[in-house]
Length: 200
Image 1 (spheres, rainbow, N blue to C red):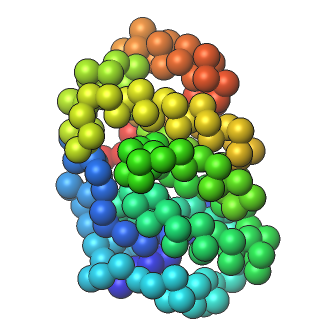
Image 2 (cartoon, one colour):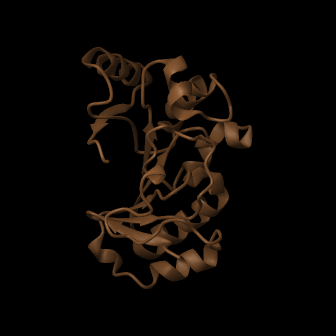
Image 3 (cartoon, rainbow, N blue to C red):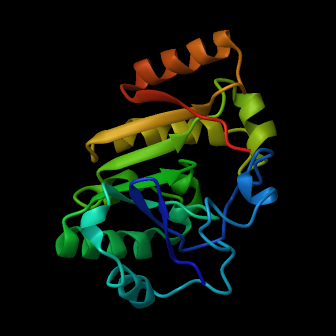
C-alpha cells in the first residue's frame, strides 16, 4: 500500500480514497499512480501509527514540504490528518500543505478552519471555475450547488489560521475572462490565485 510518495521536492501523504466529489477531470479516473508512485488505491485506510511509521523510513531533510494529497480528499480524515501533521512538524520541522477541495465544513457540519492553526502552513484549494453552476457540474459533489459558496467561505476563514491560502485553477481549462473572474474572487477573499499546469 502506498502511503507516502514523492513528487518533485515534496513528500505526499495518501491516507484515504474517500471524496465527496466525482470531478469530471479527476486524475484517478484515468490513472492509478502519480509519477511512478505505485498504485494510490488503498486496500484500506492506514492507521495514524502506520502513517507515522512510514515517515521514519524517509530522509525528511530531502523535502521542502509534506503535502496531504492522494487519491482522495485528505480532510475526509481531518482528525487523523491533524494528528499526523503535529507529529511531522514536531519531529521533523517540516512545512505542511493540504491540497483540498475546501468542502470540509460541509463534510463535518462545522467551521473546520480553526483546527488547522499551528499544524498546517499552506492550504491549497481547488477553485476550478468562477461559476457556481459550472462548479457543481464539474465536481458533481454530494452537497449540491451551494458547495461553491461553502468552499469560498472556508478559504476566507482559513487565512485567519494558516500562513498561506492558495486557490487554483488548471491552465487551458478556462477562458481568459474566467481566469480574470477567478483572480477577482481570490483578491476579494484575500488569498493567492494560482493557475496550475494541466496534467493528463
